[in-house]
Image (cartoon, rainbow, N blue to C red; front, side):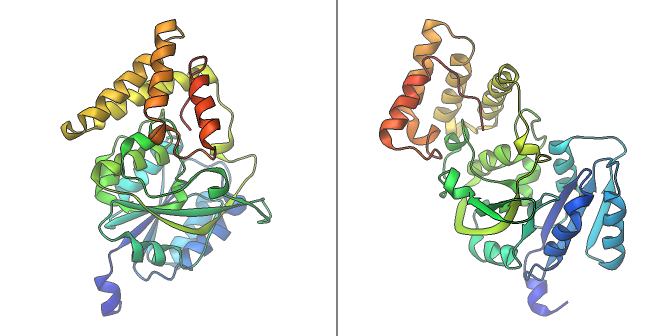
Length: 304
């Protein structure tokens, strides 16, 4: 290891796998091709039924900086990433799915720009299974730096595979709620420690296919219940200095309790008052955001 490498912070790339043999080798090859010289790769397989773990073991035998683990029982997507973070030893942690492809310079350029910020993220290029380009993530959501946890009350525009964060903060955020995606919870949590930075470059080819966890349908009633639960978790995670934000999360939770006339007014009023935060990620003009707030009198917007 060169002297320059020793002075660079170790970045732990954590990989969560489950039945991912079809695309895993291409992803692992792209992780190995990272130009940042001080990384470890920590892969945790969640009881795959195909040969995913065998592929990981083969990579680990060939590369000393790859460590692989297999769960005794299936933990699910969120808990599997949480376990991978707990096994990592780097000062920074970066999250990898099993079916994407990273640009070689991704880790280097993100680490060059992170400074003392708790987290940094970038754009992503959505692609087909055969890697044909579709749209960029920034075509779907407004992506900017974020300096307040209220931005993540309703929406999210940070894909887990696009971010790097201080591992100490990722550990402090445990346990990750199963009611919310880890890449909604962690950006929210990171804003409690400072501003999240953004690079407007797509470093990841993000495959879109029927096996995507983020593409699965959900039951609206269950999702709204989960949203109420997460509002309370947000409230409880806010430190005393963020008393205003704590109260807003409590008010959101209360307004989502029912479709009573009083709650409908409360919910619509909250969306109007804090639309700068709640609707910041939406690709809508001012008039459409106004209409969205009106609609909240009649509907509840689940997270995501």
